[in-house]
Image (cartoon, rainbow, N blue to C red; front, top):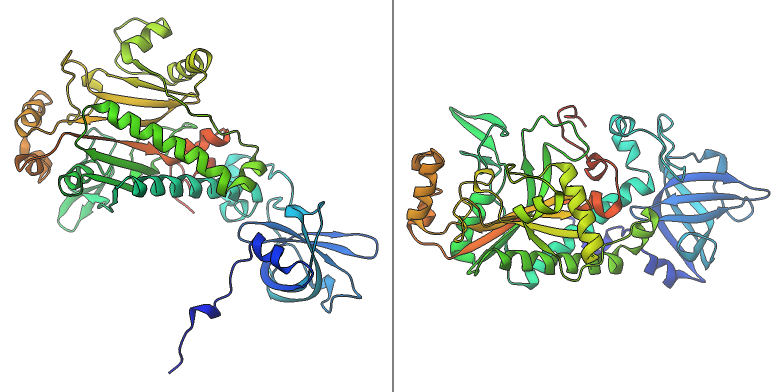
Length: 436
C-alpha cells in the first residue's frame, strides 16, 4: 500500500522562500505572464498564485529552448536567485532550466500582460476566466479574502461562534417579492435572503454567532451597486443593552479590518492604488436628522442613493469620517422582527451604515419577547404559522439581542474605489449573468 506524506506536496512560492534562496538555487511552478526579448537575453515574467516575478533567460545559462515558451504556458523552473531592486518584489531569477507542463491551445482574448486590462465590464464578464488572470483583477479578490479573514479573526477573538445555516429555506427572512422560489421535492422552498432566523436561533445557545455565506435577492435591478447573489458577513449578539452595542461592535470590527489589510495585503493595496479609510469614531444621526441635513421633508421613509452620497459628504466634511450611521428608521420600512423604539413606536431600533456614499450594512435590535413579536406580526398581517419554527425560539425564551448584515462586495468595491460592484464579485450573478 502506498503511503501519502503531506510533506511531499509542492508548495506555492513565497517571498520568504526567495529571500532564503538568495545566492542559491530554487525550483517552483508558475505561469508565463509575459516574454520580453532583449539584446543577448530575454525576460520571462512569471505569474504565481499571488506574485509577478522576474526571471532572466540566456541561451548560455539555460538548457531550455526560449522559442518553446509562450504567454499562458505553465512551467516548472529552476534558477539562481539574486536581489535586484528594479525587479518586482526586489528579486530576480536567472533561469538554468525549465519544463513545460502545459501550453494554451489559443492566445488570450484579453491583454493579460498589460499594466491595465483595458476592456469593458461586459467583455471582462464574457471572458471571466481570462480576465481574472490579470494581476489587478485577481488582487481585488485577495483583498476580499483579507476582509473575510479579518472579520472572522475579529469575531473569534471576541468569543463569537461561526455557524453555517441552510440556504434552502421554507420562508423568507425579509418577506416581499425579492425572493427566489424553487421546488423542494413536493414542496415550495426559497433561497435564503439572509441567515437572520438561524442567527437568532443560535443566539439562544451560543450567545454570539457569525456567518460568512451567500445571500440571494431576486431584485431586478441592473445597477452598479446590486447583485442577485452576494457574500454576507453577518453577526448576532445576545445580552445587548440596545442597538448601539451592535454599532459599537461593528465599529471595532471595521477598525480591525483596516489595520489587518496593510499588514497582510500591502502588495495588493499598492498594486490597486487603494486608500483605506481611517476609523476613529463613526458619527451617527437619526433618520429624520438625516432628512434635515439633506433639506428634505419628513414625508419619506427611506434614503435613495443620492441621499447616501450626500450624507457621506456631510460626514467627511463635519466629522472627517468616511462612514456614517443612520439610525431609527420608520418601522414600516424595516422587517417585522425589528424592535420598536420605546420613544416612538412608529420608529424601529434599526440602522444603516453608509461608507463612501453607499449603504454597506443594515442592522439593529430584534424583538426578543414572544408576545411582543406576535403582536407585531399581527400589525404586519402575518400569521404565526407563516414562519414555521421561527416563533418557537421566542416561545422558549430569548435574551435581548441584535445584529447586522454586511455586503462583502460593497465593502470591497468602496475600499478599492471600483466603479461597478461586479468588479468585486468573482463570478457575478445578476439579471443578465448566470454563466460562468
